[in-house]
Image (cartoon, rainbow, N blue to C red; front, side):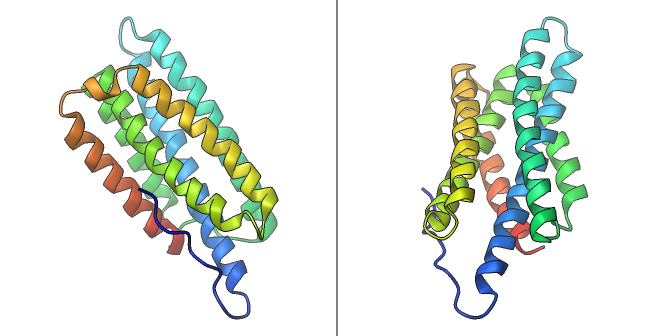
Length: 187
């Protein structure tokens, strides 16, 4: 269900502009992912009997923070500006994580599954696009994609698909992620 990879653009500076879009959107996604897990961890950490789950979310947050740090470095090295919507994505990510955690453990897992499924497809498209012209970055994205898949698989094992209103919840979160991707590439 991934989109067709974007072919290299013609013209001077076009590939650099496309790489800037890729780095900007990936940075924004990892920023939001950190906040989603932070929101889930905040709710579950304050809930009786949920310390194990809060610890699990903390582990995933730490992995996302490593991804974010790498994109921070790449943005600096390549002189790419981050998305202008970073404050919005921070707030929206935390609210999404906390909100789904307040709905219960299975809803928090459904959030993780929906987000990580969209991100996996997004990374797969970028890997296909970059594999010939930037194999080092494609390899890094492959590693990150594999970690996102592990998060998704963990969420499914945790009962994501048993969440009340799973279909609707998953569809809304997935649509929001896809919209955020498109917006963050440009802004």
